[in-house]
Image 1 (cartoon, rainbow, N blue to C red):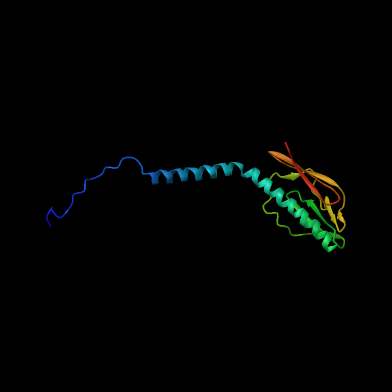
Image 2: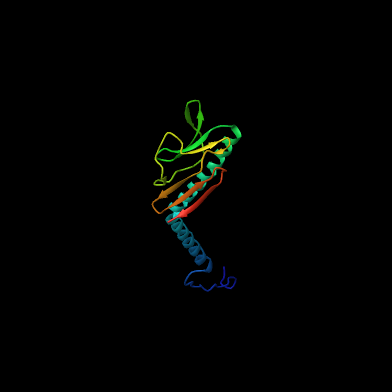
Length: 155
């Protein structure tokens, strides 16, 4: 083959990075930064999520007590909260989807086989409050007999 039929391509020497390469690097750096920030705040987020799930289940259990005509309650086991219902002469654990309970998150009331918060067919047995504490803060819960649960973050 003769050289006349082929065009000579001058070798282009690339220096630096292309725009696509820079965008890929920036996207990876942004993803890593986002993951790092999320992991730093995951303790607080898991506490908030656990308390939100618990508050939602409190309302579900109170509604179940009204609907089924049962006495139900919330107690503290020393490790996590637990919902119970009254059957004959004792309390039976009622399954509830609370998920993983954060270590160190606990109420200001002691562990007990008796529930601290009672739900009756007529509503909540009595007004009351509990302070949920963890290393970085606390949250106050107060409930009225008519079924309202108020939460407030505390320092």
